[in-house]
Length: 296
Image 1 (cartoon, rainbow, N blue to C red):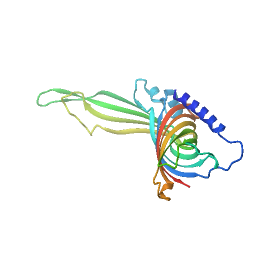
Image 2: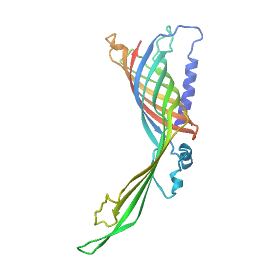
Image 3: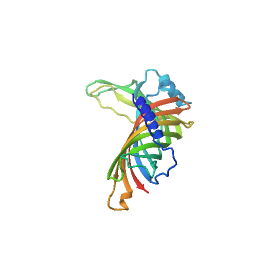
Image 4: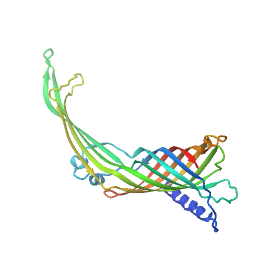
């Protein structure tokens, strides 16, 4: 549903931009903005299956194959990442255009942050009889178990740099408050893409009797750890999104302060990730950004 809305919005807004261009050569309005922003991006995606985890972590055995009885504790289906960046905005209106409630802008922005990522962990506990303790006072016998805890975890992680092109319709910017919406396209490429597989084993002694508290450091063995890390091919991404935002001028009286603008923006996006080892992933994301602009 969200994908269809984004595609329809992109189509109709694009037609509006193209049809609004005048045929004769006219000088563009020279209004330009430079901004710095900081935002958060919420990604929602389908969990990886066993086959995909095998491809993402070459050189390690998938935990489902090691022991099919392993219980999956959790698998992230979403992630939140910080996305700092900067932008330039250019006015697309003509100098001799008649006054209009809306102005048109094109915004070019760059941002970086966490890219496509996934995590999964499995845990298995195994107990077997180790020894018995006999009370010298009551003669009661207590059983002591050796407990083996195995943890398997896998991770796919990448950082991403993204370049965005956004077409914006905005209300009268001479007022203290102005509002805008539009549509945008984004291209991204990852860096520092890697996968990691970790297997740890812990041994401890524990009493199976609820009335007895027993701990032993003498028979506890240090953890056994095996870890493999793989450098993977960088992935790429394509994004379409709809921004909705608000701008606040710091002042209407001061010539200097009136050039500074605070803005907040909420965006809804549909993403395509092209990952060599895993194929193509599609997902939805929501971003919230805050920034400061200087208007030339």
